[in-house]
Length: 190
Image 1 (cartoon, rainbow, N blue to C red):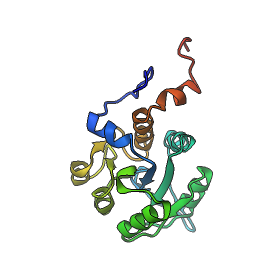
Image 2: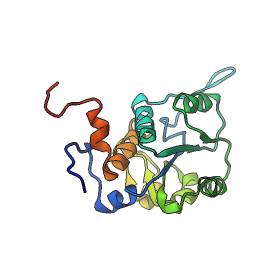
Image 3: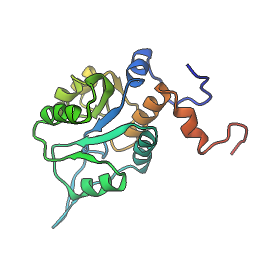
Image 4: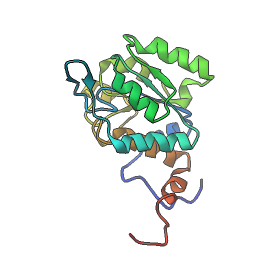
């Protein structure tokens, strides 16, 4: 293992580190995971608030060769727009059942379940979470979802949980230092 100067500001168990070291594909639910779970309905549109830090975490993963995808039960132009901004190619909306979509995606990308992480917050996420190599719940996920997750991120959905997952994966794969060094020279102080 390489000498790691920088560490994420949260704890990660040895089991989660081992699971995260194998990840090549990270899938996210949207409502309650990439957003805080609130849906604001206007006359013509549905509005969602996405956390910029979460988006940056997804970009960090992509820079290190990790594929990002979305599987969500709702359909929203806001999700299409955010996915386009983050260059997420695998966006599946309106999925009443997420498991068939997940399995099809694994076959399409030639990736195993062990190489996949999924972040969810509610009961409809469990079928996928029970199959992936790294199942992650947001900090404010339903208690049953947290019980079945390998790890629960410290932050709530839409408020940094996705970023924490990104940092955990990068740390486990030995690329976290390189990512942090893009912004911080370890010999200087801010």
